[in-house]
Amino acid sequence: MNQLPTLMPTSATDETYGGVTYHIGGELVPVLSVDVSRQSVFFEHHILLWKNSNVKIGLRPMKGALKRMMAGMQIFVTEASGNGVIAFSRDGAGHIVPIHLGRGEELHVREHQFLAATANIEYTFERVRGISNMLFGQTGFFIDKFRSESNEGVLWLHGYGNVFEKELAAGETIDIEPGGWLYKTPGVKMETVVDRLTSGFFGAGMNFIVNRFTGPGRVGIQSMYVNTETADN
Image 1 (tube, rainbow, N blue to C red):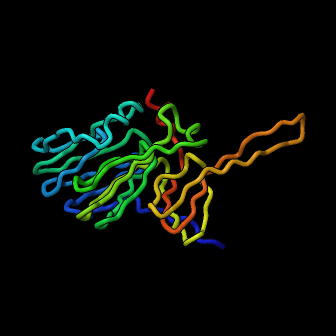
Image 2: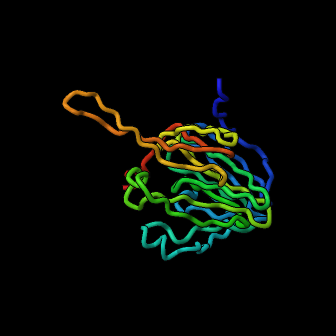
């Protein structure tokens, strides 16, 4: 039997990496708490749950702001710094996953799944064109790219349901429902596969669509998909 995807840790206590100490707790709607005394973090503005009063909030512009604005996406992220702790939570049942990025490491993440990251991580994006665009709302399909260029850093993602990770060997493939993939390492190739299913009854048929990932590298899978374009309206 092939190795199954592995459930990612669902909690963390006094975890220190990339200049911060953080905690993840809670079951249905988890909370991420980060001590920003030594390293600031940036995050999506609507996920703030609470903070110590001496933690300061500012704006951090993103690269490619004009393209993002034309696509209806955010052009700023919020940044927290100061002597204290700040806590984040997304309005949805799910799983907060910490990804430790070493120097020079990069991760590709589906849009709207980013939660927070240490300030030493570079945040860019790429638009993916093709048939998969039909599955991801009016903005098309964007992949957020996070890279730790010169120092270690932490990236926190929110997956709906639970998050599992599959390690793919070179040439190994896995097919994932389009709403199910959460992240991948750069070496993993992603393509859309469409199978035409026909019943032979008056020519009735349908398309069966999956995203095929080919290793080597890691792929994150979320067990529940929420259409954020619909949920936010």
